[in-house]
Amino acid sequence: MAITRQFPAGFLVAEEEGTIVGFAYGYFRDIPGEVLERWQAVKLGHVALMAVAPGQRRRGIGTALLDRLLAEFRKAGADMITLDCPVEAAEARALYEKMGFVPRYSEMRRRLVAEM
Image (cartoon, rainbow, N blue to C red; front, top):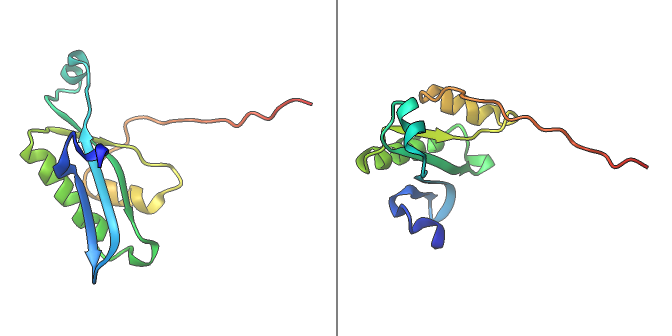
């Protein structure tokens, strides 16, 4: 897969009895030096995608995937990790906060309706 070429260790799959029940994908972000300096970071990893099948949630799969992904980032030299989480994803946000992530910014949106 092309998306995993940059950081192959950042693509993880959770299986149960031969069925995929979750996955996580992370990569290293190319961040300008002045931003890294302001954030007091050296190498920034980013959790791009993480999902657990609806019927498999609340069983520790997401925690295990994220723990493993963070370990892979740490092993590769990352000292800060970012991720995006929609406001509507309350369960995911609770997991991320439990694992030490803190909100950094708010994205806002507005739907535009065409005038008649």
